[in-house]
Image (cartoon, rainbow, N blue to C red; front, side, top):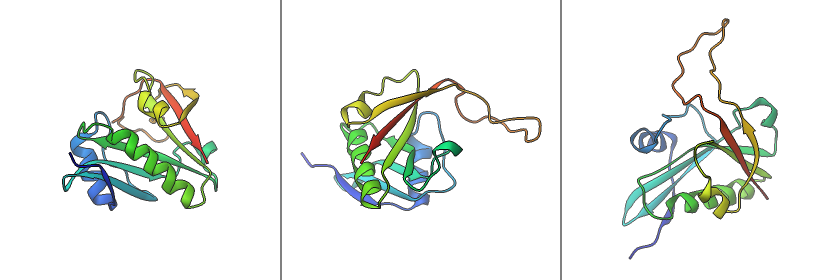
Length: 148
């Protein structure tokens, strides 16, 4: 049985994988870096790390997992969360956060040493001054974080 290995992936490759495998989100526009998990020579998961979406979390010490997707390979999620944290801290950042739907249990994050630090009400990004079509779930989310 082969082991999971890490590879660097560019945004186009990571977004292509996300489009195929993420349950409820599509591609992202920007990123700081992305990491792939490879097994038997095939990419089985990706994690994309960028700056935090919420303005109050945008500072010089925080990054955010903006997408994580796998093809269901065992342990790929926790493997990628761990790799993302190590890479983030190696770059000098002190915090890495991510949001999951409140309907998800967060078992992989908890097992990887992350802790829940907040809850966010689901809402639309659309407003009178800037109408938008919502392409994401509008349900509540849980904020998890790991600290260096």
